[in-house]
Length: 209
Image (cartoon, rainbow, N blue to C red; front, side, top):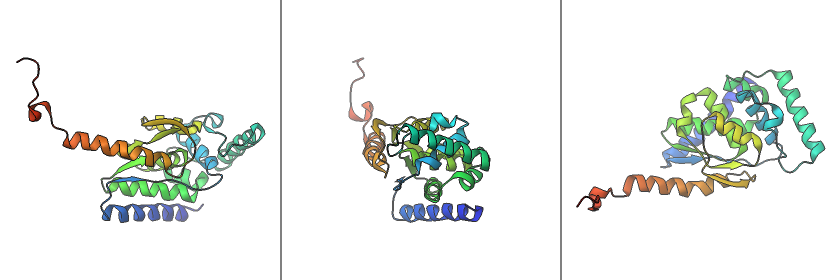
């Protein structure tokens, strides 16, 4: 895509996050729907992390061995031809990203700018998180990794950003399902932190009496 396209994708995502924050949201997640988007996600992950393409490329919707080999070869070729700069999120998005990944990255940037926590879903969301992280490294402090996908590149990306997933259920569905499962855990943790009484407040003995 052109740089103008990439900027527009980010802007659309930022605007969407702003709409949700304006409506009172403080915990925001994104999901994906589509076919073929594990391919650009693997390319992004390899470009940003420096990992070998084969180590970050999975079967997606269930391709056979020959399909997997062709997928790996296609990603290698895309990286060789386009030469994305893994330290530059915009360059990576422009050269090997997808429009939906750009919008998701924008959602994450917009949410973080509004002081919202960002729940990172599966592999495609993880690739978007890598783009946003390269554009704004401090954003990782706002990330909560929902789950570990069976797509191998997902865990590579999470580790690069210093994230540990809340759930590991061998999911590969996408569509925000892992984030939806993780959100009640995040909300419960926030309530414990904000509302649970301390021993002193509850009048609990410390054992010395």
